[in-house]
Amino acid sequence: MIPIDFTGKTVLVTGGAGFVGSNLVARIVRTGGAVIVLDDLFTGSRDNIDADIPYEFIEGSVTDYDLVRDTMARCDYVAHLAARNIIISTKNPMEDYRSNIGGTLNILMAARETKPTRIVYTSSASIYGNPRILPIAEDETPLTFSPYSVSKLAGENYCYSFYETFFVPAAVVRYSNIYGPKQNPANPYCGVISKFIQSIDHGEKPQIHGDGHQTRDFTYVDDAVEATLSALLSPRAEGMVFNIGTGTETSILDIVQTLGEVMKREIECEHIDRRDIDNIRRRVLNIERIRTRLRWQPRVTIREGLRRTVAWYYASTGKTG
Ligand SMILES: NC(=O)c1ccc[n+]([C@@H]2O[C@H](COP(=O)([O-])OP(=O)(O)OC[C@H]3O[C@@H](n4cnc5c(N)ncnc54)[C@H](O)[C@@H]3O)[C@@H](O)[C@H]2O)c1
Image (cartoon, rainbow, N blue to C red):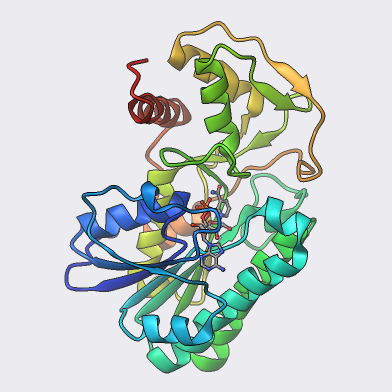
């Protein structure tokens, strides 16, 4: 593992008030770094960042070029997480286009002027669509099934082209489904876990879209944060794309069963119609590239990750479980 140390450095975290971003901010500050968060609070909230974490907050959009450039001029590193999510993007592809593609282009254009040490762009395993081969390696042909996956892939392509053409030191991490503390149940990627925890706690039946046999590579947020920061700190990450996952395929039914065990409840599920964004049947990522190149590997098993997420849920709702 690369030692994570930002002592004396300033990191811009776009989307830092969101689920993954807020966890990233806390980790950077704990390792001695200063953080500037740029977030338009579209889905994020300042409540996600604990009150004892010192950071500078700028409420604004990555679509504002002057703001992006002026903020980047004060930073050594950029973790670019700000994005409209898949639900917003499916409802309004133009809004997704402006934030996800336009915002990423602004970061890269500004990098030509401000010369950060490194930029990490957070992409998504959704760019793989329904893959031919599992586990999915980075060189699998993308199949962009949704406007969201189009924009996430476009951001990646811009990173690579700016790296090749203008020597902008950009790296890409492709997240699988991330879950853990601070996740809003409305979060479309993995909000399902927060929703299940809430339903089970309230004595309601967890609602499963479809038969529940669909699988994902569920990754605990601390592991995703560690991987992102390893890419931010390593020159070996520049110009590269890395899958971030666990290499383990888990079904929705497995999640519900494990939550039942962790929360010590008998669970009966309710099956409802699948949503228009549920068009991917199976997904699990091959993580050999990041294992060998950056020496990162996931540390938190699904059972342990669910146990920690449930503990956080009880603590945040003032319950003892
Ligand atoms: N959570 C996952 O499982 C997952 C999976 C794949 C990829 N990702 C990617 O990781 C990143 C973080 O995802 P998340 O789950 O934390 O989502 P999130 O919605 O919790 O966080 C995104 C943050 O970006 C902010 N934002 C959105 N548009 C903005 C804009 N134009 N300018 C400034 N801020 C803006 C939001 O207010 C929010 O705080 C995103 O880029 C997402 O595409 C996440």
